[in-house]
Length: 247
Ligand SMILES: NC(=O)c1ccc[n+]([C@@H]2O[C@H](COP(=O)([O-])OP(=O)(O)OC[C@H]3O[C@@H](n4cnc5c(N)ncnc54)[C@H](O)[C@@H]3O)[C@@H](O)[C@H]2O)c1
Image (cartoon, rainbow, N blue to C red; front, side, top):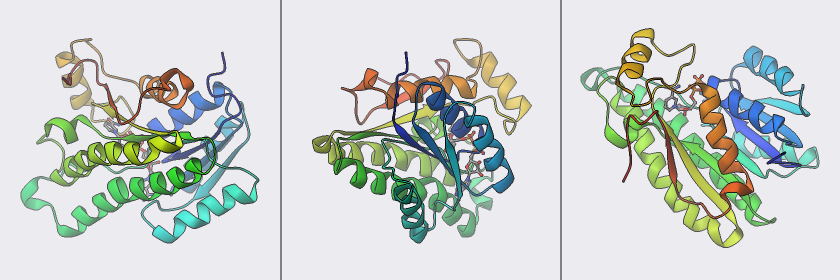
C-alpha cells in the first residue's frame, strides 16, 4: 500500500541518518518527489541518488537557520511546479559540552539550527499547506528535551524542549487548514554518530532491549505523514524502546 502516494515531500537534514531514512521511507511509499535540504553537499547528492531509485529527488544546499534561504528553497520547489504536502524537519546538531563550558556562541548555534531552523521551515510549509488542502509537518525533539540529560549539552536539551511547545502551537494554528503538526522524540538512535558506549548503555537500559534504528524513526514518520494519522495533531510520539514513557 502506498501510504503517501503522489505527495510532494521536503526533508531538511536529508543527508543525515534519520532524515535520509525518512526520505527513503516516504519515497518507497509512493511519494511523487522528495526535496532534500542540507548543508553537506556530497552526502546530500549521495542521498538524492538513493532516493531516485524510487522517485524523482532534488537536493538543495541551504543552511536552515538562514531566514532568507527559506524563500530560496520554496521558490525552487514552486519553479518545479510543486507545493509541499509533507515536511520532515530533521536538520539538527547535537552537543555534549557541559553546562559550565557551554559558550554563548555554542548556545546560539544550537538554538539557531535546532529551534529557529525548524520554526522557519515549519512556519513556511504551514502557510503553503493551509492555502491548499492541508498537509503534514513532522518535527524532531529528543528525550533530552523531555526529561533532561546531563550527557547532552544544556543548549541541545533546551532547543528540543522548545520543539515540544512549537509542535502544539503550530498544530493549533494549522488545524483549521487541515495542516497537522506532530513531533517524533527519539532516545538514542543507532547512527554512525552515536557513541558506542551510549548505544550499549541505552540498549541495556531499554525495556525493549535494543535501541532504535533510523528506520524505526522513519516508520513513525510514515505514519504521521500519511492519512493513517489523519486525526492526530500536536502530538509527540516517543520512539525510544520504552526508555521514557509519557503520561
Ligand atoms: N540520532 C539520535 O540519537 C537522535 C536522538 C534524538 C533526536 N535526534 C534528532 O533527530 C534529528 C536527526 O538526527 P540525526 O541522527 O539524523 O543527525 P545527523 O547528524 O545524522 O543528521 C543531521 C543532518 O542535519 C544537517 N544539518 C546540520 N545543520 C544544518 C543546517 N544549519 N542546515 C541544514 N542542514 C543542517 C547535517 O548536515 C546532517 O545531514 C535531529 O534533530 C536530532 O537532534 C537524533
